Image (cartoon, rainbow, N blue to C red; front, side, top):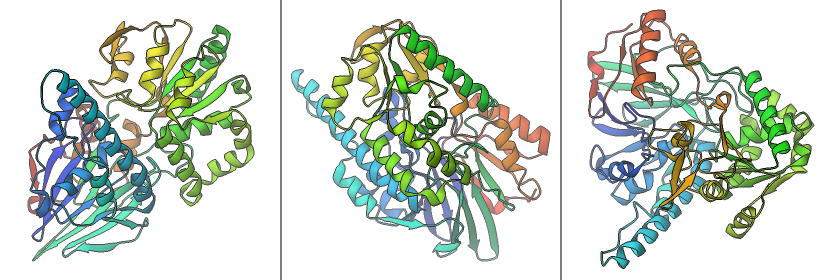
Length: 467
């Protein structure tokens, strides 16, 4: 009975953990590594075990850094089930198809460049056919239903409040003469955040895998964030430029639309064209609307009262031609586009056309991993490179921190305190600084035994001593 760490152990992308129990092998997460040229090499690396020997995958939520290598796993021989929450399965239909098309497009572009140098073509990490095969292996589950997924392994998903369908994973593990309970937080949302319910507390565990993305800080008060947003919109209107908002298609985009609806008059949004320039974000927004049963009561009331005001100014930009037309707009547009870390998608074209203009604004409303273009903007680089061309950063860059879909240090500590006793903790999905800070806070306030695992390390679940 063993758990080994193969991704997001000292980083925040590429989540992947291998659970071995009762002769079975289960991957918890199968995520894509994001950020820089080094990520491509890691994504093409071998899986912890040959794909055909993996019996099942358990997926906490649909974000690509948790799900994005599933088509590659299937292409290499995995034929087992993928267990996840029902809404996550629906989101993955959007996100994995989109990821596959991007892989194919990027490979075709690189192959053309190589051909001009007399070099051979490159193959995509995976293609659309692989994504379609992977989607057929999904086995959707509802929250709060415990079931056996393999002999000796039982699973229950709890609402994590991070994005639609996100789950905390509870696993009951049995071998002759031995039983253990492993709880994996997945990505935990903030308590009292709009739209989704708060993360579900869990009372018992023998071992806890806890995310630590923001383990070294507390988020800014939401009221302060909303006040700053209003000031940015009013000032930007007076300056006569555009506002660009790189946003994750799932979760962040829907929260932005929610607060824009709620504060439509206060922020004077009737004077703007609000352009959602992301086919994937549009599909995800429509999916959020179909799953009202997963929303909290407060958000449903807000949308029913105020949603029509936003819809009067909101434009869904679906085609590439419509997106290119926005590049001719020199003022009056709020453009929400992916990708959230500016590593791909339509936002890069809008940045190329607006970053050098001093009367434009860029709102960074999500986590920016090391090595990404978004992180370069946050760090204040005077120039960034887009398609090999240096672009001067004259636009105002605003880091608006209160919109995180991840719990902060206080939220992570509060969720852990829901356990009876002090089960040992392994901190994952965090860079080293935040992990170390959270480890110190956990040990100091709860007395928990905390480990910061590295990729390749493993945990013998048989040797656990209860806290």
